[in-house]
Image 1 (cartoon, rainbow, N blue to C red):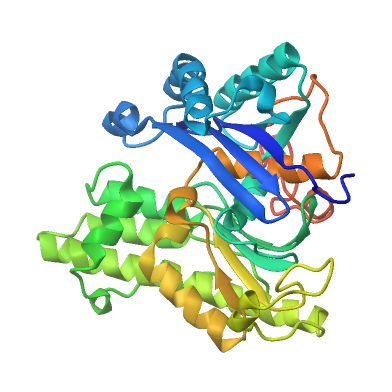
Image 2: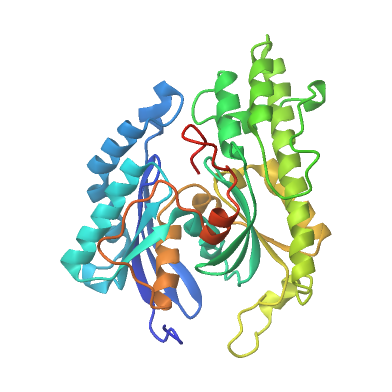
Length: 388
């Protein structure tokens, strides 16, 4: 473990878990993380005709672009291969064909340049992504909300996270995209639905609320997705679509707020030592060896849905109510990117945690494996039961 970062760690990050081929170089030093380069090749045009990501097309595109994107990231950083401390690559969860491309390329770089390899959990990358914009201290409460994931986690540090709640079916971003598809808004649907919702009045539609009888922090968006998709078929005018889009956006924001509020209450009960967030403390010197905000209430929202302005404002207001400081990654790092993978890798390298070259690509990889194994969301139901 590196006790004191007298010298910076410089890590090349690779991300290929879905439909972005991304590479980034990040420097981690005593004053936090600095993104030296971040290159992302989007496959939106390649998948638009299908209304969603096609795994085979995504994997082939990663193979074609990974070398070019990585070389561009190295050139933009102004550094050479000999300046790198390690290479980090997403090893899951995600579309396994794509994950294999980035992880294999990372192994090749590590082997050719005699560098440590860091196999990073994609979700852990999102968990630390807010630290790319500010020196957000551990611990913090995290809402990870994206196209494939919706979870509430207590984050005590890199590799030390506990799940408080998760979706039992669809993720919020998936609901956005599939409802938008049913409304004929194209792909990606989330941003298009948000834009349309600004012109609508959601009070016209009464959408279902999920899991009202439960008091835990789990999410469910499948019922909302089904109901909204059926209503989409009845929309005759552009205003009808706008009103439905606004109703959907508010319904998703409401559920995120309700579950997050429960998590905040539970988090504060288990951590009575945390004091309300004080923004002025960021301008004051911190005690020796202690990062600013270490004992304050911090709330982080990460993932692609964190870019939605309505959801951001809803959660910002909730954080203020309970004395939490609200933190989110810069918009460029909300969606999938390699800078967050490089940072997660750098923090692991700082602790001396490196991976073997036989690290495997994993389509499923929960952040809190102990909780996932001991209390799985999907119970075993025989040979035809859910796999999770």
